[in-house]
Image (tube, rainbow, N blue to C red; front, side, top):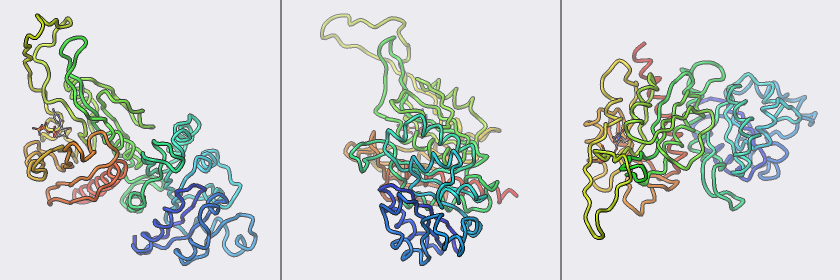
Length: 411
Ligand code: CTP
């Protein structure tokens, strides 16, 4: 990030304070930062805080004629390598989608030909509103890249999707966008890439009303699909039964059983990256009863014969014509985490394994946070605890990097 010039647009949301931290981290990495605050942004954080941290004047109003004379909105855009909108409020995103330009921030955004990364931050209902969904879809088509939002507790006391991504995740997305190897002036680091993700549990029928299942919520797999799409990928999400909304802009294929998941996954190839985050049931009932099973007598035992399910990760990772270049699996363990996960990487032929401890009480299963160890051919990386959204963004930014170095090695 050395010598890169970031133009940071700060919208009017409580998350604006996190943008101060973002400036600090960008400066630490050698980038220079200029900030523009919307009128709302300046209500939450002062332009002075930004000018102290950026060591530059912080800009606020298009109609400040002195600023326009000194440095106009066109120059602000011209002198940047990347524009980052953080927080990107629902209002600011709506203006961007409409092409409105009634203040300095929106005038710069309309006048720019540089890449734009937006970090949305808003109340969960605003995020889910059809108007915001439409605006996000429009902006994606326009080539705007997104990072977040994350799921979690909000300033208004509600819970859900809408928290601004953490500065570290925004930083990773910035690094990906600044990577000169990515294609096109408005592309994300995964533009032109196909990403295939499995998510959620599978349900294996015993009879027409009963099934075998597990406690997977699908939160991690869905977060990965959101993050991959936000970084510009064309994403197929093959999901078992979950109670989560479809990530916007993602092709979702819903399945129930491991066999259906395998078929849908193979049908979605070719892909550049495959991530198996689903908790696929290892076994299914050997014979699915055509009618509801009856108990023979009170207190009597019943035996259920199980047959093994196909391993989707191992199938995808087999050397074959359509093998994705990067195959990533998960290892959920309750003991000997690194040892078992490394063995799983070798046994299944995956390139990377994301190992996490799912001992009850860690909160990983069904929770919003995770602590993972990334096992690659080069060794083990211990990642700090973070939200599943942040983990997803960082993992995909890493995958984008890995793919571009694979490509350069092949060139
Ligand atoms: N996986 C898969 N298909 C299966 C079983 C697992 O694709 N039938 C994938 C999961 O999506 C995950 C990885 O394999 O990426 C590890 O899954 P896990 O259940 O932890 O491993 P298992 O192979 O089931 O091993 P064990 O239960 O013995 O630990």
